[in-house]
Image (cartoon, rainbow over all chains, first blue to last red):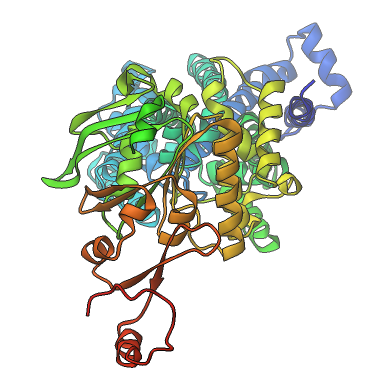
Length: 330
Length: 291
């Protein structure tokens, strides 16, 4: 048996166990604490009580959204970091989240989301795809020669989309403005169950596709030329993965708002402990991202309970601090 | 060249031209490499040596001309099949990732990966081990590649290309930035590969004397064209070198291998030496330089 496969299995076993543990904690904790020994009882007997309703209608969907969003944002981070060969790239720093936000605000302004539930993620994906296309074509046509400038252009695009976003907000009626602002704060709450399942399916499919491409990601991270000479269809693989990253980011941002730093911090953290082999990094980042978001959401819900903090604030704070610590201790 | 043409040719290039924004990168290049032959490409910076290597692998598309690999046009191979046959060691490959030497070399097995294969096969690992053994880097196996020295990195690059199990090996200035011991180590390694595995090698070198010592055939390039091609004796003459590099050199001979040797001299020292040359007891170097 291949030694690496064994190591892969052990790493993922530990992470999955941790994920299940965190999910259980998130199920039990909140404004109303459910003891863990009663949890099984409540779930199995399907007692028609307020407790069952809280668990199934409020906490479980939140956890599912957390898994999907945390995993998908981490995946997008892993993909972008490998394709651009830059460890500082993530959906947020490249302005992809900003693009998605712009698309979504346009969608809300024209009240499309009230007619078609799926229009929100669709516009999010278009916004994200547009930004990736802009960055990628600037890169491909040789306008951007070095990777530092690429990053700067991403930051600029994120500023531009932010300003446009503000412009749209300032021009809209107060009712819609409230709706946009509420969405921007970032929250794992999503009342529409169909959207939750859609998000979860897209996110898990994304994980499956990315792990199929994980060896290609290893080759791609050697650089375009080396990858070409190792028989990789660089153009094709890169396009598939970039489209996947924009779909994932667009979908996530449209449902949970802007949650920064996950795509940056999680892959770094995973690489620190599990090495840089993408066969491990892809799936391990997915699970770690899910754990991270669920924990952050738990903090957001319980810190100043019964009030609730936007989860984006917690991920930014916790993620930023962990990241600085990791950099300094290295 | 005559005796090399008689053997089976691995690579034949016919009237290859590459253009970039109306400027010729390569112009009308034709040559042929026999099996088990080591071809050295020399020439000043910007003369198209690297471009030639990349045009052969197809990374830089050719505008006109034909390339045949083992008597089949190179377009008839798909990218994956070609990377099993031709491996290239690039100068620009940066080993800045934090991955193990072993994993890096195993990436050289990528052309052999089947569609749904996730882990390397036993055979992949065996071939990677062999590549480490022949390049003598077994001790580096569990080191991170970004922590290696320049010479070690170069050996690791070569080992990765070796793992591709190529028949034709292209190297772009493999001795760059290396001390003389490492330069010799790499070139003797290539010599061994040539002899033991009957591998054909095409190597870009800046050091004319190393090229003379290790290559069977030399190609001297200038402005994207082949200026002179042939054995070292025919190519490394002071006239050729002067018209290509615009510098003065003194021709000599390596006392051991009897291959041509080029002495570099600064113009000031040359003038002094000429002034003294009326003195009969100066050096025994044949003074064929222009006066």
